[in-house]
Amino acid sequence: MSSERIRAFLGVWMPMIIGLFVIVTAANFLFLADLTGGPLQPSVESWRLVCSGGAFFVGSLLMLSTYGRHKKAKASRDADTPTTDPRRIK
Image (cartoon, rainbow, N blue to C red; front, side):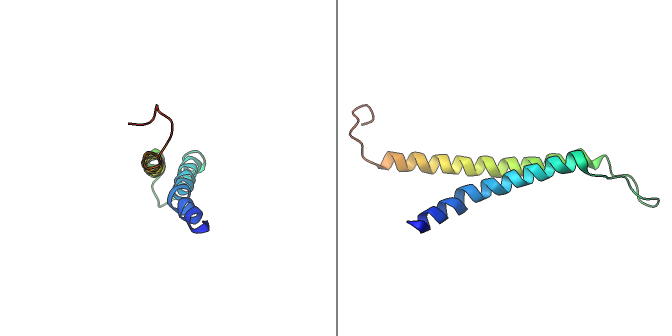
């Protein structure tokens, strides 16, 4: 029983937590990063939106693909269980 719960947590919720962490980090970088260069370094302020957008995209993709996989597995599991409801019988 606990191994199924651990598998569900690691397979579904942990990637979603990591994706959320990536999105929060991207937002933090977008709003709070100081990207002004020193005297010999050019200003890289223009890269702020590109880097934040890329990280936000990766985090969103991770969360959406994990949610889709979870939804598909749940639908498959529900289709395999027998039911006595006449409306659900095919």
